[in-house]
Length: 297
Image (cartoon, rainbow, N blue to C red):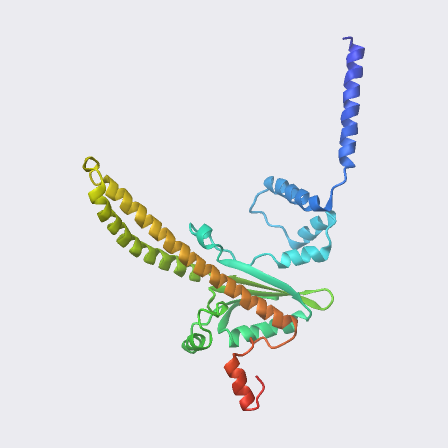
């Protein structure tokens, strides 16, 4: 092929490539695909940077504005960032996360909402403040004798979980239209550790007994040439299986506690949203007692 023909071929290829690039640039992206594209682009961008680098909120807003994201959506996403973190544990897959968050926008100013929540959590859930920022308060269970006694009597452990949380963060941020974004972050890592210990202890104890019985039953039927190898295998298998069953039962009970804690917090948000008292509704016997004496429940 002559040089002129080769040049024409290369020129045609370049033109076709340019047209293809132009077609890609004009490609319509469905809204359902937009989130995936943005997430992947962010992953690629972050992979080129130091993971320990920090961005200021101003930089986050600037980048979001360049992406065309509404400022109030970005602000709410920042409010919903988790405040509490725990180190990964080997039993995470069994028991699930010990830290979770629940949030909602309520129709009220942030300052009264924060004051009401602080008063309720201190006086009714027997928590104490360990750190305070402008819009966020950190709580832990109060450890004085009176609070511990009141918690044991007024907040039974099976039904009231948040009063025994390892840590709790309450964030209340003002949003447009005279509303407040309320977020609860709760850490049940100590309750999860107790569940792991109890599951391993009970499962291990029963596993020893089960493994010993299985080994004794295996001895007479195992071939003599194999010695005690079959008994060791049966003992180890029975013990491991029983311990795993104990851990599964303990994990199920812990998940029930997590569900109860979420229900508590959801009910608290419901009462906060509708402007009612933050105390949960009284028990039926207390309602009857109040009616008997003509008092308001």
